[in-house]
Image (tube, rainbow, N blue to C red; front, side, top):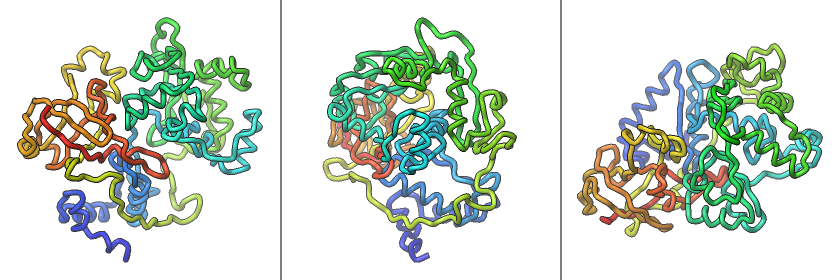
Length: 426
């Protein structure tokens, strides 16, 4: 209680700009609700304190009992449909498939037996660390289905890192800005051309079914990766179908052990499904936590890595726009989308437009300590005074040349939601 008293609503108002009475009202609504669910997006995690922010949400759910019941819980809204499934499969630096800790010797021995080689008892590198190691400890890289050059912060650093590699392979459905830097580009199948599986935010495991044949020599991602492994002389990659890949995952992952390709035909199961015949787990933590009682975290406020100053007096926050999916690899090539969103604009409060000598619809130069971009101004009331918004979707307005001032020390997630900038007439 003493910890909470350090942060009254009036203090939060001074940072967020949200009226203290509204903060208090929201807290009362959530606390008094019979069922309260928290849904959050990257505005929570893309800070140097992203882990702290999520832990604070966990504190709220624990404090109010909004967990382990229908209509409650803490639910991350992901930017792509299978981010949960990627984590399930072990696409994390700290886990094997099924969230089995890589630092546990028991898990190390289990996967050494499967892989036919011993895996180091240490955390793997995050993408941030991997890019820092390019040209030194990392000499070659495969990038599968990600337009890293456009999405990642501090674009100049990212481009330099990829150009430092001896060999870069990109697997994608189009020649993206990242693929243009590659030594080899392998054509992948698109979503409607691929059989596979995805797991969504509610942990529902679902089949994806191929609807049309792929063009030319395009192949599924799993096929490209397994054939590269085979040509490198690695064993265990003799897959001939997505079904075989998924069934191997089920054999290795405790949370998928009761599933297989045929059992997920209708998509009714939520993991964990620990054994055959198990009905699945639509709601986690019913009655109790598996590993004991919930633990409150004492989280203290931290300023962003970079704060506004006389030289850079405006906060830039970045994100996505509904008509432009991520870096427009697909939507930018789809006829008709330009009628919904034809260009990137810098959303700015009308008071700031006047204050900084700008014009609605006119060009501006936006600068940060890392670079500058030229962008059109859009005056509207969505942006509060002192804050501007732009997406990273348009390569001709490479906003991520500006970002990258700080990273969460645990996840290495970039602080993309706050970046001090200066905006001037172009």
